[in-house]
Length: 487
Image (cartoon, rainbow, N blue to C red; front, side, top):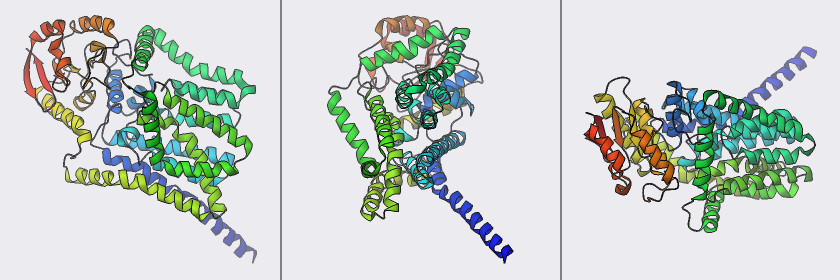
């Protein structure tokens, strides 16, 4: 009889283990949805991939090539050799799963495994079903997800030094990590010294590397000075209206989180309520910084709202609050119906080997056409310069620039978020010196990926570049680009 009971207990334990493992299955499936984008590159991820290609060619960021983002993004894509396609999408899927696991750990440490599973599932869902330009490319905001969540998790466990290290790593991905540090500091007022020491450790390592490679001054110029000018020169005419509209749009597609969070706040312990409230408010302040409210900025707000919603959903399940669960479920249908069909269409296009018929990826497809021409006509080891903001051409060709400049932003002073229609420079005096420096380089290929879209910023509109282009001849053209080769 004792053997039978022991065997039954073992079977129940084994069944429980498999139930827990299978609970992660939908989370894995959701993370793998991004594989539908295997043949596409989105803005920002192509920039960091191109930076990784330059980095792996032995070039030092900031010193040898212009890079106006903190260094961790380039290092992230260097893990896969700067390749796009399957390596890229699988790396991003694994990163999403790691972020989901951290949400699981945080929610479980505060409440129970139910909240953990719900939180992980919600994070996987909303990093899948939203605007592709916001959730598919892993730019600074997305790459900060894991160290952001890790910092908050360790802060909740009162491990201030480790928390500070994670916040410092986040800072090397995105300067908005200072808001993450502020959250952790408020939570751990009695442990500010170890928190600060932990934060300074990775930052000090980064500064030491910058100093040792001679890139520190250039880092300050490109990341901080350019970033400040970029934020100061916002093209948004009515920041408050823009913020209200974009916040409303984001909350509309994430209404399931809003409903669950509001319900959960009614039942939340006061200790958790003030912590989650602080985390949410400061994360939204980071989103609002610069008053642009770009969709991918809201990735900083997603973690606290997800954690709060996980408690609300779990409480509704335990309390059998059917109206809450029905409202949350119905709200989840909105992003699924809006963004889900695109995954199916892209997957069928991939299987059929057909180019996507989608206006959002027209520039990416044009860059692929340019790359095919250059690869077919060029020689291994040749260099490339791209006028405009088209870093995907570097990724598709696997070529790199022989000067510090590989796009037109520091040469025109006009940021990429407006140079398709505007000509106002935020960096005009330095841009003149940068153009003079560019003319001392001699790339084999030049691709003008901007002139056909905004003739006022065409390459030959600048006198010093006009004389530089005498040494090149037009050899090809696509719908959006003009291709030149050195004579």
